[in-house]
Length: 521
Image (cartoon, rainbow, N blue to C red):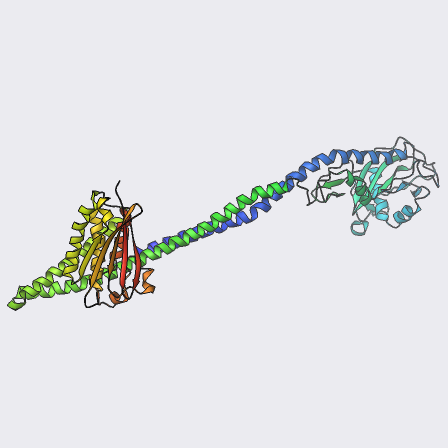
């Protein structure tokens, strides 16, 4: 049973410690998690407020650049002028792709040179002129060849052989603008139907500069917003631009101080609960260990205390049964058996009384009367017990107590004084052992001072004097009988009737105990 209880306590301890540490971890991370939720909520709110303005500005500036190209591109010219109004700061330049090749207006020669060094971009523009949904393919990785004409085929577009004998002219209105991007390059283009097939014109957008143009329109509460091309798995929120406005990680929380202050109490409470849980657990374990030690001390003390009288009983009763007892020793042996039986009775009485107090059961009896009537009778019983032990006793009453009324349990008071008297007899070492009992009136209490002239109590033993089964070194060595329960029982009895028992002083001249009792009204 003991082993099972230990296993249950160990499992319960692990459970409580685990729960306490989990609660402590939750408390430690609660503030950051709630702050993260608040940041995300605030970021989403500010993003929703920012998007309409940013989208409107994006539409406006892109529409301006589109409108500059007009509805009749100047095809067929070797050189053409920059569209009216020039180009915006985010526009890297205009281009036109026809059967005559890639062209740029005067002033965009740098863009023309860059496009001519990037045939993959030019090819993508050409293919998307025929089919805006055509994929952007890197020809260095995905080149295919038509076995009949031996011309490179990129995706869904096949290079056409234009009929150069016909003049290059428009055959209809240009198509709608659309955008595509590849590795950071953003192109806005449209298809131009010509006699030599579909051509294209448009402009190349600098994504960093257009982001700089749009970021000032974002809510200032977003401290680190970002605008860039869409990434894998993302959906554009800046139509018509294939770009995404992201709120970033830093968000201004205007009520962060109040939030932190509100959370501080919750986090502190969780920490306190965790620490208290562990403290209570170890307190319970310490209490259990103390209880086990007390039980062990009780068994050891009672066993030791019972061994001597039982040995005497066995020896003397066997001699009486066998008739081996000398006639002149009969009275002596009868006296010994009587004393041992009284000692065992006193032991059993103390154990039962302590057990009742431990279970919270106290005597319900109340004796009421004048101190001058109740106390002398009580002291006479104690004096008689001390006299049998060879100890003289004197008692004095404060004259003021003759007018006082005492309401208490006299049996409990008698048992307390009897235990003190037994200790005085047990540890008496002087040639003339003496006990003085003085009764004094204090504030609303009656004080009984019990003093002896014994050897006193060692200072190191005084702190555990009223602990159950606490015994002095002499008792432990077997020289003195007892199980160390008398003083513990006496204090508990005193407290159960509303009083208190304490050690007032103890030195080589003796010990003094003070018993206080409540007075009746």
